[in-house]
Image 1 (cartoon, one colour):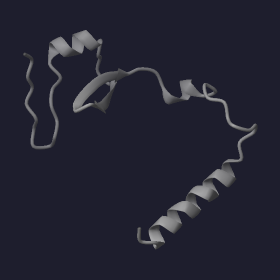
Image 2 (image 1 turned 90 degrees about the vertical axis):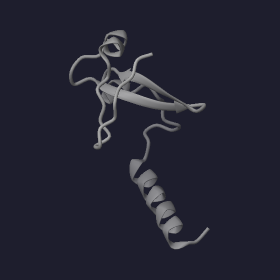
Image 3 (image 1 turned 180 degrees about the horizontal axis):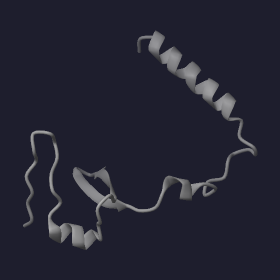
Image 4 (image 1 turned 90 degrees about the horizontal axis):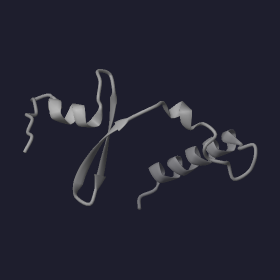
Length: 83
């Protein structure tokens, strides 16, 4: 069993065995997933910009101003109504 200690600031050191297993290096980013009562730790590789173009819009080109306006309207409605 491999353990680490949580500091008062919520920080911990990832044990050497885990860093080696995941191939982690300084400045690497980590992704925490919660699935079925478990926490899964994965190295986050690459940059979000690498995903650009991997999802096709429903219509081309997307009207981001309309999407933003609809989202703002929905948030305003939610903030002003009690549900």
